[in-house]
Amino acid sequence: MSQFVSYAQNYEDVMLRRALLDVEHGFYIDVGAQREESDSVTKAFSLAGWRGINIEPHPGYFEELVRGRPLDINLDVAIGEREGSLTISFIDDTGLSTADDEIAKQHAAAGYAIRTQEVAMLTLAIVWQRHVSAGQPVHFLKVDVEGLEQAVLAGNDWTSNRPWIVLVEATLPNSQVENHASWEPMLLDAGYVFVYADGLNRFYVAPEHAERCAAFKYPPNVFDGFITLPLQRSIEDVKTLRQTIGEIEAVRVQAAQREQALGKRLALRADNLKAASSLAVMHEKAASSLAVMHEKAASSLAVMHEENVALDRALRESHRRIEVAEEALVQAHERESELRERVEAAGKSWFELSPWFRDFAPARFLRRQGRRVAKAGWWALTPWRIPERLRFIRTRGLPATHETPPASQPRRCGAGEVHPCGRTVAPRRAAGSSEKSDLEGS
Image (cartoon, rainbow, N blue to C red; front, side, top):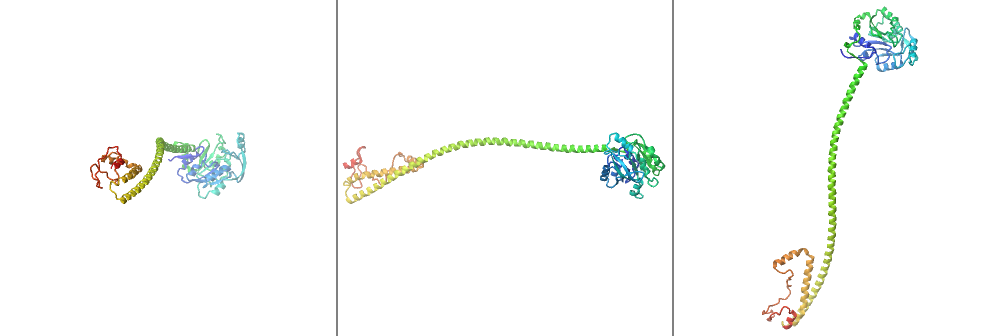
């Protein structure tokens, strides 16, 4: 047997289910239905596919029934011994609303807030006639009207309208005082058999369905396989809580994973920061070295600038000297040409040329000086060739200060040699004698 959820106040639905277990889609009439779910005798059957008539004059409870039982017939009327109207004393949020004035006074004395309202009233026979189709069995009738049980039962035609099972609240409101003596004879006279009392209700079975009587031998027990609505809600709450715990655990695991990943990222970021710091230190050192190098380069540039200025000054001086030497050379060439013309014009012998030779000595000196100045200027303009010149001079085995005589200078004959002019040259004088004195002696 599958687990069954009991919504009723005193397990009435458990007993009815046991007796009607073979009925799949039954029909019920609930007089005084009250709430749609809590303490409802018919809720479990509605969920199982049953349909029926819910009669509840309390406006709030009636609205609940309309919303929760759209396939049922919901009537906001009172049921009595006749058709008409009835004044009811409503006590909100309880099942104590009643049309009995004495009971209403007792509730007021107990501190309940009461409000009265006149509602329409029908008989059970009229409801049956209007809303139960021909041939539709009513599997159970439940009556809970807080003191009007006799009037409700008296308004039915028990000859033609015979529910299989009838259960009626049999105590005075909020007490264990039984009050069935006033209305039970009507059911017994109609042939119904009393089968079970649960301390709050009395159950009766129509004789034509006597086979149902055995189901009421024992009260609700473990073999009925049921749980109460509060327990069902607790189970659902536990399931929801477990699901929530599972979701929270999943979130915790994800959070832990994210935390671990974040820790790795933070560690990597710390390493990167450390590397960046080291790189910054290296950059600072490099910047410092570059600053030093820049300072040295600036100093070297200043020195080079000064050297360039000095070289430019020396170059200008060399140009000036070269210009002076070139001017002297030009003058020497002019003097030489003039003297050659004079020699050629005179046509004299070597001896006759001696005065000329003396006159030409200054020209030869200026020419030699011009060549020296020109060579010095050229060496000043090409200082990078000085090492090569010095190596060349060394390879020749000559002193660095030696100068090759100009090609145009006349070759001087040695002692005893015959001069090209035909004269024998006398031996040279001592080293201190000048060239001019030699010529004069000749």
